[in-house]
Image 1 (cartoon, rainbow, N blue to C red):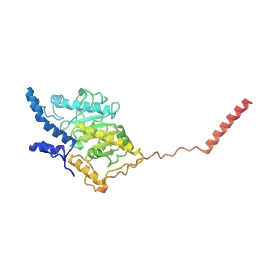
Image 2: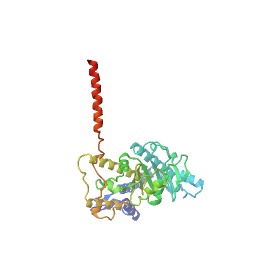
Image 3: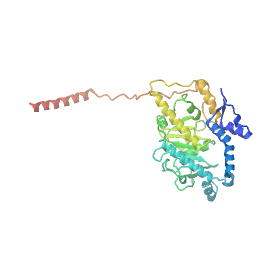
Image 4: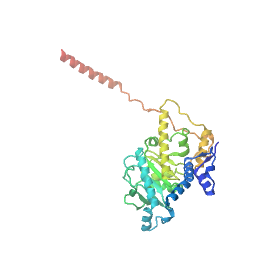
Length: 351
């Protein structure tokens, strides 16, 4: 099996001073690792070009941002909320919200986003605003109890779920909740998507179904949070989907794209009149090894090969089992009698 290098491996190589140009051609790089290698190799050229033109890159340390918590002064919280770092994150939330809306993953003012920005602080989207038309100034700063500390618009009513995920899963730095139609269809049916079909889904998503509770309530947040130790993409029964990422808001959004495309593909495959092909346990184990290297969660780590592809709840091609309503013999006789009476009246008038 070929060696796989993750973003964490590349970061360690950079820290040690290794030359990334010496990475063998037959090594497999994950997408994030490939981006980091490209960025690192192009950096000297960008620096040289900037020096030649007399331009200087702004130093990140030239504009220090106070380290704040929910107990910090209002002045410090406002300064943090309006800092360049937070403004950049707000812009990311606007961008991801627009992408959710453009792909019809949200409807009306549905869906919400959150990013952990401190020990007990998070940025989140506002309530009652379409995700396709948000502005950076619409965003809110909340503590981990859900209290709003900054922002002119009211924070999302579902922030407690995002915060409970972050509290239960310390690695979660960003969360995305939306209503992608195909994935939400599985959530309404209470069925986990079948596994062992498409590599991207197996590597990047680990899906579970949380029981329904009223959106925005602590009960709903708890049921979702109970699953995030081993799953990063949760189907919320009769509601939608929420995902978390240890990397970025965009990475949490990517999981939505992967899940929705997968659910749609699975449904198309089941309509072709043939049993879908699945991977072998050995093939799936190779993907799970990549997943472990990426530091992503999955409840199947450590299982025996015969236990890896359990799709007992999946029933492709099932049709409605409710029998057609049968009309009684008495009803048929009554109809015949009415028809005969009308026929007799018409014949009498013709004579």
